[in-house]
Image (cartoon, rainbow, N blue to C red; front, side, top):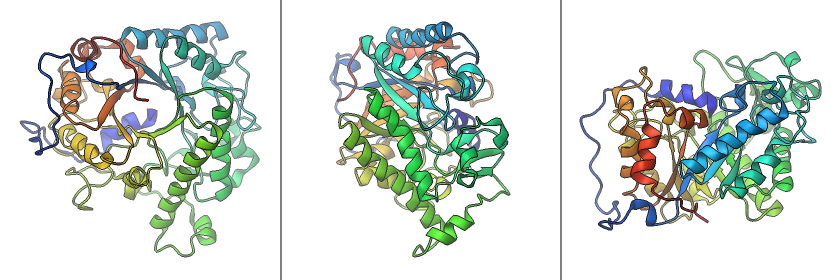
Length: 416
């Protein structure tokens, strides 16, 4: 997700901003209750991502004392309460390392500046306890396969599994990833993540949009040996890769329920499954990346099969953007989840508000509020999550304050 913030901005095909949003398809808008504040109608998620990869949001820098780290973390939780949010999505496994005392992986580098160094406290345990004391849910955000934002294994902790098992990881695009095609890798990353589920009363396991890595022009992901060994019976390498991701999702879903039945499993994918030009079941978009084809992640299929409890697509574009229109993608996802029992939350690009490099719509403080208003008209949308915590606090053009004033008049509980 942290890396996706930049990736998402670059993978949408060029296009001009349309003059108006798409018309509402018949029957897809739910009836309004005149005079009633929107936030009294039902429970909804109001989430905030807190990224730790490369100290994106927290800690503000590596090497702070345990007390200073805790103070900053509690400050974000208090900010969530002040904004009348009800969930914090905390990145606890940013680079195949951990924000808790894991027997599987080293302590995260973002804490002390040295991967594997004990920070002197338990960040995840503290986050769960303090979030719950404030009436907030704590969703533990894991990245299954990313090992490092570089390819130098000597910079990893000596005990890091990618050094102990060098055949598990592959360099690609200047980064290091676990190979999803190896069954032992798939089993290990599940064990590592489930350790947190066993130890802590987290409310959800949350994954972002990284499965197979985002494509890099002119480079190939070197999983040919694994394909030769395990790919028999598949029509193509792409089909085998999708099967590997499917297995990770299905197996993790089953194991979460076996360990702690009340913990939900949610995924926040890139906002386009497939373009309609590729697949008639896809969205009327022209995105340069399609999760099914490029990340080997059949996000629509996971919903239809009931493997996940919620989906939070990153619809990180403005209303009217020709290549990926917020007003087109929200109703598409609305229909995908209908009748499945999977909750739909919308990932919102708060970080774009006020950024001069973004389309003009993002320089309007009301753009994000219009997103929430539009989505409120679709009966399957059950909330929103904002990327990310630093942007919530900075609120550089008042877009978040506008959302709160317009839509979050009182605190509500998240969906059960």
